[in-house]
Length: 370
Image (tube, rainbow, N blue to C red):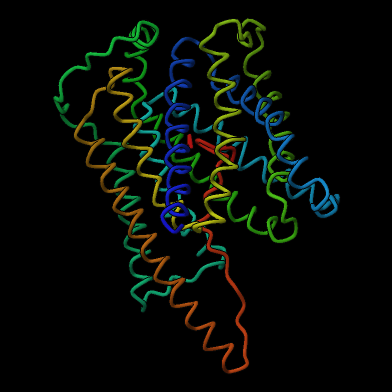
């Protein structure tokens, strides 16, 4: 029974990472074929909203708390950061870089969230404890890796050519290779801005989750508001109706895939896995996405690997695990302290583990590119 209980959360998280990887590939191809990032984000939110309706209705319709005006204002602010800001920045960054760089830079999220939590006094550094030192060192390594990946190209690593020939990918990729190279710095900057926006959303969503413990309904409302925001911004930047056409199968698949697979399905599987195994367990699967995307990008998109990308990605992953290890150590120590406090008849105020929250609604989710 224990083996079964361990296998299904593992399988769920592997499926989620493959789902996010597919989104990065299909979205990149759609934008290479001419689809604008703002248009893709708008359609993603519309399809995500539709996909979340049955989850919110069947799982929370009778049990969710009352929806109030202050709550709607909070969710609206969350939609601006976790949906609109996060995804607009991410997809613009993805258009101007590569899926591998996009996935690598999203791994700085726990470090950025830790920095914001410290600045907002929701977390303490605890520099005298080994857990605090690990989180601080991991954050520095993550940021250093992100800077290296963003501003250092280096020589190309020759790993050979893929024998897979996907005609659609070859046609769309070849026409945009020059543009991608000329935006080598712009893309990573936008992706890092996406991570900052997502981290801000974490700090806001942590409070919403306490007052409104209905994640499916909250996500539905956030996606609905985000779809309106993205459509308004998208129409302002893309006036021609032809740019909003979904007649191309590639564009339609990218929009449907991102909205349904990487919002409704991924959110449900991730939430279930967190419930079964905890947030830390879910977080450690994040680098798997980078590996999958790197392989698929090389095989299908003819993406070239450079020394700066490989070394920067390695540093980011190392920093990520240092932050997660420090957080795990801190949580265990806090558990021991809470037990001692209970024995002594006292109590301690709980703190939110912001770095470990990993909803499936950005970047891959709505709040990976992920």
